[in-house]
Length: 128
Image (tube, rainbow, N blue to C red; front, side, top):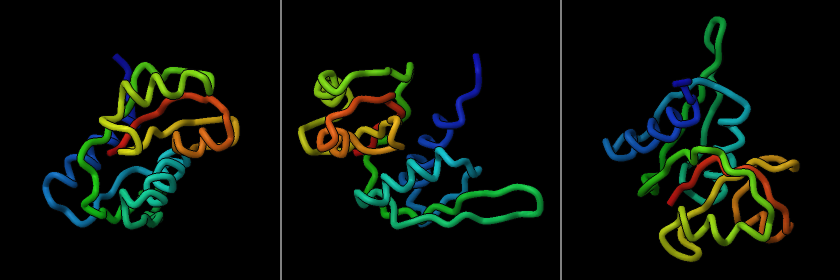
């Protein structure tokens, strides 16, 4: 079984929130920062900062104590815009409660932005 850094990222966030921590440090990747941008836009985190160490980078994530649940979606379903509602019903507890995080040809965005642009993508995870 292969290691999934995205699953580690979501579980680190969830565990830090449940432990009542104010911040958590995670290994840097462009994808992680794009996901954090989406989470910050919807108030799930306060912000983040990229920290440069000697020969690697990390992300210091400032938690907003707003995450009830977050997880990676596996397998990473590729879908058309018409199928978006099906996945929202599957992964989110209620309409307009939480967000799906999706990788698209136009970058990483939430399901709400997909609805405006009427495009599909690949499901990465969800937060509520």
